Length: 517
Image (cartoon, rainbow, N blue to C red):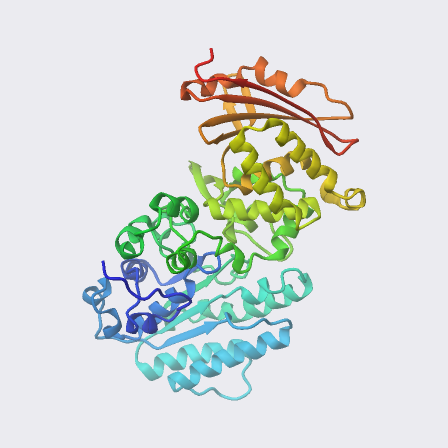
């Protein structure tokens, strides 16, 4: 139970090992990669340890045995061989032109050539230099080259809101990566990592995409077992169940994992906080969701085809692929038939659910300062079972949104806007929410389980005046029957929104006490 140094921000395998940091041994998975193939692609969200993965592979192929003392690879890797490793990274800085991209590529190639003792003939373009580097490295070292690319897509993502520039970046990178397939005979192993899978690989069809491979779901990130063994000394004083609820849940069809950045900062700061979400959630993501009028309750149960999740391009970014590849949604369940797979997506954990909905509320209301106070007040009202206060809270919220914002914002015009506002308040609290909750008589719009109580909500949009249809539907279809066996009070709440008044005009409540038949 000896505490070790937390490797916060350390992406260099040698530094991590030499400074006595905690390390989750991923070498069994790395050796499996090498045994099973030669050319790989892996997509993972930001701050998931991709750079450390690439650096570990580099040290392995270069034969630096001392760094692997006590790890699985020490006894299972052939240390009699070492390979020339070519490393290309776009992790540093931001590039905003094709010229800058070419300069960065040439600088990457030059640094590798100097380190490996390779020289190029003059007058070669980028593909020519890259090809020569791979061939000459093999010739001078007596072993095939290893090619490792970190953050392969960052120049595109940094310009995703400027499609013309993003296309130039895509084309320039395609020119570089297309060389890998042509140099197959001179390459022992190649791996490219990034956040998203752009359509750059039409000429590189020998890459095996392991992004949603169950065998490699845990190749980046920490598993529950890792938390309970490697990080056992850090757990005293922290609620283990809360750690799991807040940070676990990222899944790529196999073992679920924690984001390393979150967990390490939790152990350092000793308090629960949305560390990952606050380190760079892209503004364009929130812009896209609001511009497309995404029904926020749908975020909890998106359904997507496997081919859509693996496709991403400057001209076509489906909402599902965007949220999945950036880590805001993850695999919840899979339905398969021969030749086809359908994924139901969900929030990975409480951090993402609460933080994403809090950000969406700011955009949906047009005022970043309002939702924070509202959400905190909602929690207190739920604890107090203050139904009149709930009605007043939401009525006041809609009233606080300026008329000009309603008129000028397309967000307020989409169907489901009012229910999205309502849902996101509850989701921002991280409560146990069931949407489209199926019963034998129909679907409950929203069920909330909180503080030993059951809250059943039905939403209706009316033109002007309340029509008392929402509560009546809950009663007519006996939605409460599904939850009677819990032995908890059940609150039936019908909410009606007026399109003309842009507010809550109906809020009816009926409570069934414990044991009510």
